[in-house]
Amino acid sequence: MAFDLKIMVADKIQEMTESATIRMAQKARELASKGVNVISLSLGEPDFDTPEHIKDAAIDGLHKGMTKYTPVSGTLELKNAIIRKMKRDSGLDYQGNQIVISNGAKQSIFNICTAVIDPGDEVIIFAPYWVSYYEIVKFCHGTPVIVSAGIEDEFKVSAAQVAAAITERTRMVIFSSPCNPTGSVFTTDELAAIADVIKTHDNIVVVSDEIYEYINFQSKHASIASVPGMQEITAVVNGFSKGFSMTGWRLGFMAGPAWLASACDKVQGQVTSGAASFSQHAAAVGLDSDMSPTVEMTRAFQKRRDLVIEQLKQIPGLIVNNPQGAFYVFPDVSFYFGKSDGTNTIQNADDFSEIMLAEAHVGLVSGSAFGADQCIRISYAASEEDLTEAIKRLKNCLSKFK
Image (cartoon, rainbow, N blue to C red; front, side):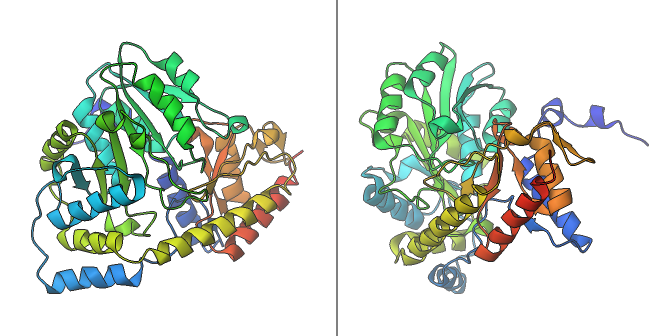
């Protein structure tokens, strides 16, 4: 019997956009499988290994029999480590019933949106934004309200813009700092100004995605939850993928008001239940142990950032800023829109990324996936040799476009 895809697949899935970062990484892998020397700078994954003491802790946990189900919201051991971490790093006090540990920070965001958003609720999303924010809000039948900032403003939305976007239907504000895809980092003063706007309204939840907290080239990470009066209405989302290079471990968490944590626990209990037991043990050890591997990784990323920016600035027409965190640069490439090499014409950022993969064999991600269609995202989570070679290829390829 033949099935009609449009009948069998739910509308909400058909309307969902595939993750552009995953799609471009897959295209790069397919090209590489044909023998092409592809340098993929598309995925947001540290190229460093998980620190040895964290891996050893997981092995130790397995030997000690940590192989069973955990409570849905996480083990007491990891919750206590997160409580200590939040106090140490952000000056925030939490109780165990305010924390939910999930299978990655992405699940934490999904849990929060599922728990809070009703059909028709508006969600203010700072753009450029991480690709999944928009799709998760849509999946939860919310209405995304995009508030954008350009490269001239370091891609940072202002308090005045937030004030102008809030309506009686606003239920949530979501953003990341340090930001994926731009690497921009909000200062304490900038967050305080935004908080002052939000606090004048009732029933708005703030989701502060701080997954790149430790990859910060400024002085100290600033959390909007630390602004007086904000902890009660803020869900801080964080995890272990970036700062501890634990992407494959699939472990994240949210810390927020008890009513929201309880709702997220309820959602997760019907979806995945608890995260892996031995992973949680290893993460607790990571939070309480020597952070020097994370510090060294961050220094390496900062060195790569400087290298990438210096070399990108040698490509005519690109507009490049100086991001203060994460491991991305987000240059404006609109100078090349409308230009052709005689065979290919670049009309937009999507074309730019596709053509650079096909012709220069460098994997990038179009800014259209992040709500900024004049830019492209370059991940510098790669070796200095690969980064230098990739930018050389881009420069040579773009020199043919007139």
